[in-house]
Length: 574
Image 1 (cartoon, helix red, strand yellow):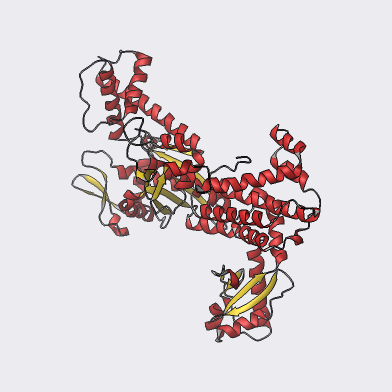
Image 2: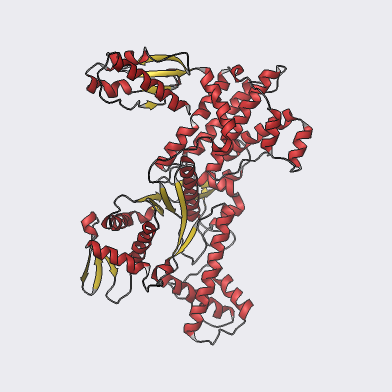
């Protein structure tokens, strides 16, 4: 049981005892209202239960607080309780409770802070979802980091998370892409052909055209135009799709499903497509009508600013129709909640998408996280173009220069609704001014301390792959460890910080705020560096040494876990 839960039990028990003694009259027990005091001098926890109960009990909050405080035992995990202000109950934990955090972390390891979500919790998180018509830009990289980290945090909090990439492979942009490759193909064969303005002009299109020449030569020069366009479209699509998979793998982002937009229009064994099914369900709900030869969705019934066209008068479907069928398909797959991560420029698209789900009876099922863009800098100066191609800087180029860990950290250093200023040169630094290096260094330093304490023979076994680092630590700290010796304020500060981790997991999952782990990891690393300065880990007192090694090991685990929730590595050496 986590410390927070133990404190809640004590407060609730004291409140119930006051009711049983006749000091308070309450039919229902209010929530304890536990929160972390802003001022550390006010204790480890503060409860607002007295103020929450005041109206129902018909008493002054301080009177209620006194009745509760007098019944909270101070011989368990609490060392002191004080009443402050209008009725806050400030609770200071006993050192033994904090020392127990070390034991809990070491016992649970990477399961520490893992939660359980009661009730419906099957969540679909869709992110990146780029057109397969060109390389990922840096903004796509941010959506990748946000989606992946949000999924990791929510999964650790107890949600059943399914990650999905929506491939926009249906529509005119695919034909434009194919036409772009055709033009570059003919140009590379010496033909005098102009590239139309609407075509894709990136250097990667020339690469695809050259690959076709390398494979097929000039056989497509005078081929049937429709056949050539189809062939080039499918090959260009396959090329870019493979590139997107490769870069996602490089970034450490994996999806449970890459969902093709095309598949929405393909009939099943009954001859019905996902589009047909979505339209039938919407029609049955009574929100479709025809006007001027087009088919419309009555989205204004759900606070959208205007009704939306689904099928145009020429019989073709709109992009919104694909979105409607796709989201309906998601709900039919059994998800309780949908989270889409979009760029901030799609803000105006949210209302119509939420409207369609409400029309089917899934009110509130769609949540949209908007991600602000990334501003690239180099030594403080804006970067607009790639040095390699003279065009936009791609996500792959950024990864190649900066690396996955630093890129992820910076992309996740702010809330999704805030822009990120990404300075390439700062991200490459290997010193304390680079926050990800600072945190990883703290982890590596702890590993070094543990290796030194375990001895050269044990360390060599880890290096040789004969055992893992956890095995080294288990051997080092086998048997009893007297954690009661951990009394220094810098030791207690570390334990307090680690105690905050489980509630941070729940809050970050609830608020879709994975970025908080960048701040938390920095604070924990800072607390460790302060401890390392103030306390010798390996001392002449063997019992104290073992206790401090156990503390270091617990910090190692929580640092590694925090980094893993961000998708960042925790190196054992640096």
